[in-house]
Structures are given as C-alpha cells and as structure tokens.
Length: 340
Figure 1: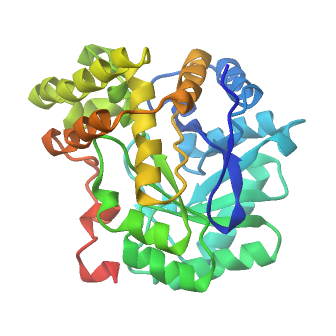
Figure 2 (figure 1 turned 180 degrees about the vertical axis):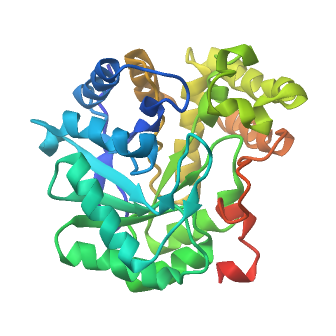
C-alpha cells in the first residue's frame, strides 16, 4: 500500500496529498448506511487520507454530524475542512448563496456544534453571493481565525479577481473548484493567480462525479441520483463523452492502472506544470476505491499521455454545471463586472 505523503497548501497548511470528499456519503450519488459511511471514513484515515472535506449543506447538516463520529477519538489525526455560504437544500435544488457577516458567524457556530469540535482547520466560503463584497465576507471569516474557531481560510468557486480581493484581507490557504481532465476552465485565470499568490488548489469532482472512472456505462445505474439531471450524463452527451473514458482507459492499460488513477495522476501533473500544490478530494462510498485513489500517487504519466489527455476537454459535451444560477460556478462570471 502506498504511503500517503503530506502536501503543503497555502499559508503552510499541511494535508494528506489526496483528500476525501464526504459529500458522497450523504445520498447525492446513492444511499449508504451511517455504519458503512463511518467505516469508509475510518478506512480513509487508517491508510493516510486524513484531509476530510465536508460542508454544512451536505445532507442538510447530517454529513457534519457523521464526520463528528469519526472525530471522536481521532481528532488529532484529521485535517478537517468544512464550508458555509449555501442556504437551501441540495436534495431539491433550492440552493442559494448567502455571504453576509451575520451568516458567517451563525454558520460557523452551527458547524462546530454539529462536528463536535472546538476548531475547524480549513473553513471555506462555499459559493459567492456577488451582491455582497467578498472583502466583507472574508473580513468576517478572518474574525473567526482571531477568535480561535478556525485555523485557515479557503474559497470555493471564485474567480481570479475575487481571489485577489480576498487575499488582500486575509491569507487564503486553498481554492476549491471543479478541476479535472474534462473541466479545465480554472486554468485560464484562477489557477495561475493561485500559483502567484501561493494558494493551494483543492479540485472537487476530480473524477467527474464518477464518470471518469469508467464504471458508469449504463444511465440506469444513476437514474435515481443527482447526476441524472446533468447534461453531460444524458442522452447523446453521455454516449459521446465515453470517448474521454476510452482515452483514460487506454492510457491506464499502459500503466497497469485504472481510468480513475490516470485522471488523478493527470491532476497532479497539472499542478506541477502550473507550479502550485494540488490536492484532489475524490469521494466514494467504498473502501476499495480509497485504496485505488491512493495508488494514483505512484503513477508518472509520459509527456505523450499528458498531451493526449490535455486534448480531451475540448471535446466534452455539456456544461460542467447545470444548476440554474449564473453565479453558481466561477466560469459563468469570470468576464463580468461582478467578478471585479
């Protein structure tokens, strides 16, 4: 079994080189029991995947409660990340961003109570409410650091300009946004800005919500979960996007690896190319997948592999987010005045 090394994000925050995205354990991609979910979390920490990512909106708070059970007796082994900034429900897609200072303070106290801990290691702004200046929100978050409730600050789905503005208020340790072999818009401005500022990058959905693993060959397998409503997973797009998986699988065969491992290896290579630390946070309900993801750390892709993989995103059919909110993902406002 690979020993998971430590990666240093911005502001000297040390985390395991691969993290665990816990949203998967709250029914978004299929049901799992609390006992099985907790066993998966314990296995992650057992093998060295100690950077655990959750959010107050996952499972309407139940995901943080689940994480609290992991933390009992193991708090010192975990680097804990959670997020605030989304009101509403993921289950019925009524999510709306909320970033005012009062909500910052209200949210952190609620998360600390659910998590059963005195401090959150990395606290992210989950989504931008563009009518609230990001300086105001990050200023309130900085007060949490001063109060000892939070150790480091992060931002999710921000533009380069928003990251710049936030970083002038308080050092930002990490940006979390979607980044993978089939979603690369962050490379245009956000990634270079993070590299210049010394901010680490935490890609979410590094395996394309499971699509890049090659295990989703029949839409019926996810007909009852959140992915069924995404354009990349539907109809003609689903069939055409299989070409991405076929390319990953062909390279995987060269390396005696899996498609998922190649997708993660590409992200590590992309981080080196752009000159910033990259720590993906794939999620899963199965312990074997955790071991598989850790194995990606041992893979070195050839330049020809990387060139082929780099070309794939240009042929992907469908948007990376279908949520009906123009401010939901950073790519939708990167060139608009609200990003300034």
